[in-house]
Image (cartoon, rainbow, N blue to C red):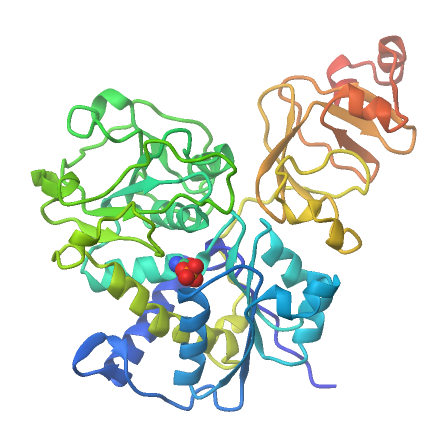
Amino acid sequence: MAERPPLRHLTSINDLTNAEIERLFERADRYLADLGDPAIPHRIGTSTATAHGRILASLFYEPSTRTRLSFESAMIRLGGQNISSADPATSSVAKGETLADTVRVASNYADVIVLRHPRDGAARLAAEYASVPIVNGGDGAHEHPTQTLCDLFTLRRENKQLRNLNVAVSGDLRGSRTIHSFVYALARFGANIMLMPAKGMGLPAHVTARLEEEFGARAVAREKYAKANASVDALYVTPDRPHQLSLSVGVEPDVDVKLRKEIDVVYVTRFQKERWAEASADYPKIDAKFLKQRKYSATSVLHPLPRVGELDVSLDGDRRAVYFRQAAFGVPVRMALIDLLLDPEHGLARYDGGFAEAPRPLYAQAIGIRCANPNCITHDPLERHYVGNKFWALPSAGAAQRLRCVYCEADTEAAIVANGRRREFAALAPGAPAATTPTTVFFASAADALAAGFTERAPAQKRARTGSRTKVAHSP
Ligand code: CP
């Protein structure tokens, strides 16, 4: 049997290095130059035969216009063909087929699979079972990496260099997967991120933690920017330094920043009504009145679309509105991505790839703590035979072990550590290092450990066995 090249998936924007993103954009630029419509420069007007004989499968478990159609258009423009499952009601999902089985089957029908799914982390599960590249077309509130590629490419075409660019992100920052991928990329390329959330819809804690801990972003003290930008809820800057492997933890409120008042980009998002039960109150609306201040005079207004009232249609003719071009760039950007995923000679499969992450222990046990995110794919009853508790153990300061779900990347805290063989547990002590031996089991609480049939280890026993109170607390 011929040896297969290693598979590269795109489940998160962090599966690509900055250099790979740049390479992809160079390819997209080339497609626009070679195949662009002479009358409409942002539109691909003709086709090539790069992907002749190759097939793209779209598996969409949630509605989509741009992502699915632009992927399919991109594949046709490359000379390839599409097979599409655009509605789970008309596929075997309606009969109860799992995602894991579906992608295993579809891997034999296509050379690349684009997946959209309502569960956070679904793309990572699919990548574990597929034998062709999986592209995340949006998984729950987790990430939408190809949207971010379109967003960054749009800024490039607008001649906006990312380093030190002031980018305001507005709306439902909690539930918008496009925002989560976008802010990671902004930090990685050194942009300043200005958060303008709708009330109660700020970035999830694990996203801001990652901005600071992995991507080197620093929160700026409010008094440094509030006079010029009162509507900005929080501001993150990324100091100049190499971004790969940045490990420093914590906020530096005195970070020295020379902020300009001008806002270079406003990125607007809709309320994610499919993810939240409660109605949105006082949702920010971007209109001509909002943009009339001088600091917005050269702003580019982006929106992943669809819009549902938060971006006024009166802006459509405004020179600052770039959102329809942004949607059009979905075709050349996705052409470049398909090309890079399928090209065995010069494509992504040749490289180890991925944004370098700090090494961290993997924790996986069938029992014990579950992901705290109720929408995580690990909580989908249909997938229970295919997906389990799997976490990265993160450096933790308090009396809890931080665990990041490998699938949805949300954080969960364990207060209890147990020995799975002896079935004994103890509370974690402050500053406990991650101890992930094959017998380590974490629980959220003592009550959970007791409910699982574990017993609390007696303090006297602990001292006798180890002679160290701290050690015992971490290794019962
Ligand atoms: N921006 C975006 O993902 O749009 P669709 O939901 O229409 O694919």
